[in-house]
Length: 66
Image (cartoon, rainbow, N blue to C red; front, side, top):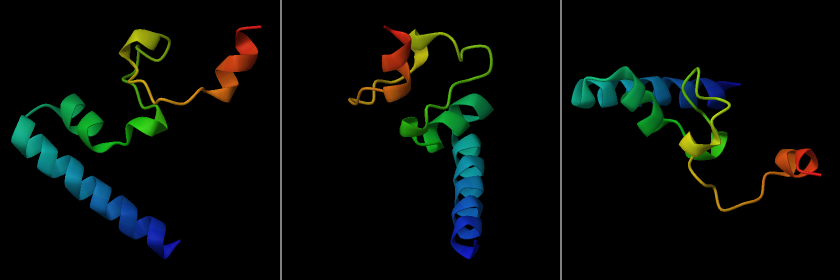
């Protein structure tokens, strides 16, 4: 639990620093959040064209395509 709190503190700090550089909250969040987590802005969650390719097949999507 302590390791998670340290990670979250660092992530929040990095997001704030990114905001100070970019002056855009959306850009700040998505420049810090790992792309592998699949984070997308609200309203864009169903638009697969906005997601960065991970290079791996998503097992959840494989069952949907059958």
